[in-house]
Length: 190
Image 1 (cartoon, rainbow, N blue to C red):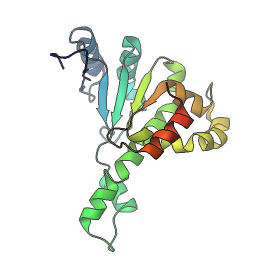
Image 2 (cartoon, one colour):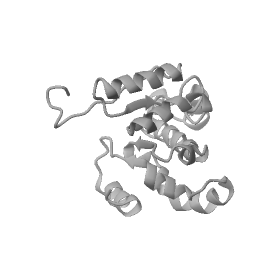
Image 3 (cartoon, rainbow, N blue to C red):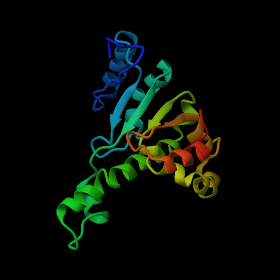
Image 4 (cartoon, rainbow, N blue to C red):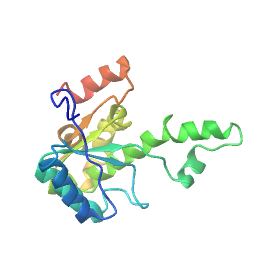
């Protein structure tokens, strides 16, 4: 990355267990080291990142005008057992369904849903999130969320407005034309 800054950029990884230290480290990573944002995995300590405990991290990202990339991680055993385990298939199938096959995409999609629902974009309108794997299922439901969620959310905008204005979607290695066409229609080229 350092040898080819015109071609590559790096994201910071933070000590999210201590949000004040994480915010300080994000400032150091961006201002001193030239990193371009932060990567956060899954959830932490059984908490999703919409928990007010983590707010200093997102405040720092907003202040620095850098994105937060939510990357999948393994989901809890309880969720895996409830949704993906079965006596009808091998444990490896459960592992695939609960991770790269579907589960961790669902989990990160829920993370982004919760960020919008928390009202964080009303507090930090400059906050930018990156959601990989074509948006971790959320773009498929934007109109549905507008119809069902928005009237009851108490937020300033419709769900899809926050999503289209504050979330950037990447393919993350899932290089498929149907999903690309859908995202271009749903999210626009920008």
